[in-house]
Image (cartoon, rainbow, N blue to C red):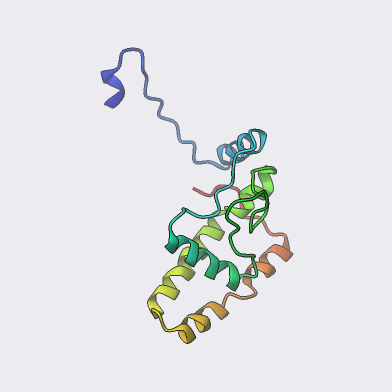
Length: 136
């Protein structure tokens, strides 16, 4: 309906949420050398992302500079970039963040919850399994 108000503008109803279009997104990002955002920018995301990374054997978020905490600072390889942002990785992050939030500020309990995940990412990376590129 919004497009109807503008002559010559057509609404294009296309489902871009497919493995092919997701790969295309990463191909364009790598070709154009787009900056890779490691977290949303808020302090809560920084805290939760770094907790998750620590539990999964991944370096902390690096703010600024040419080197990222995880992978490259810029998109460079569509397959590698897609794996870093896969739906499995996103789902696991939010599952873990919710578990940590439920235990509250008790540092001992937070460490206990996080310890469950300490080897998980390393094991997934070592087995070479890829479950599709679509991270929508």
